[in-house]
Image 1 (cartoon, rainbow, N blue to C red):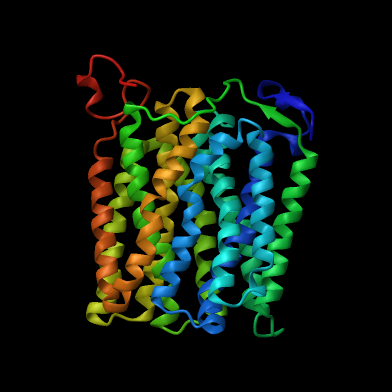
Image 2: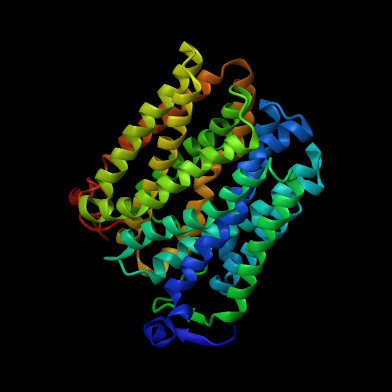
Length: 410
């Protein structure tokens, strides 16, 4: 763990010890814990803790607080290497997931959710930074697509086991959470000690920075965080509350998402490389507007469960195109800005996430359709912002207005 290897020399290492292999290992380890937690969550809180729409909103508000505070990563990496911080955070996520079922009350669930969320959000912040530092710009879209597919593939095995054995073996929430969280802990601990520390060629600035020329990236991150909460919090909750989905049925829906992601994520990466970030994000946001309007139609017009399940899968696939936002930033950023901006972007992404779930939880009690109409409006706002991305973004050409500026604004 103490050996340091410059990134330029990493190709001389055995394949299993190279940076790209570590990225794939982490990509597989994280969703084993997080996705299993998500798959069981709605049934767990409704059956065990008797949650309603307001309670689930508060749970997700608590879950997003560490994301809002992700800017604290900048202070931590002054003393701890990003690679170490990412793996330690992954261990925390796995450990907290493992003991989730030990706290079957509102207070207990909120507490353990906070701990797992600290691990998840600090891991995600550092992981995004490492991806953009370790991947070459011309290969980043394709490799990011394959990393998404790897995470889906790892989770697929866990979900298949849940679907096939939940009723047959009479599994409990405690058993599944312990197995999934424990496996994530073991993988992360192995990676912590088995891999050298990789040294990127560009030292990262270890203080908070806000640059005017990144304003469009910040705005897109804010809107992405706002509308994503509605999908994460309420789309799955709708399947359980309105249509009565049981654990194995919710997990089956997740399985469909995983298989679709494994097939489509690499294709999304190739599409971003070929058609550019602007076109990819425009396609995503147009699709999200349609999906959220259709969600609202389920409540307005009484459309059935098959349409709801189809929309859930399409919704999930469209979010996979968010990798275009990562590569957009990679193209416009100073190399040394990646780590601090990843932390700042995570905080911006979670500003709305801190208050939206709780607030919309109360709106949900009055009108679930109104929640999805609001999400459609957010997706439309994102579409308007995506139109400001130039066809060929780079430093000095961050937005369509850049050609009118005399020099890049810092």
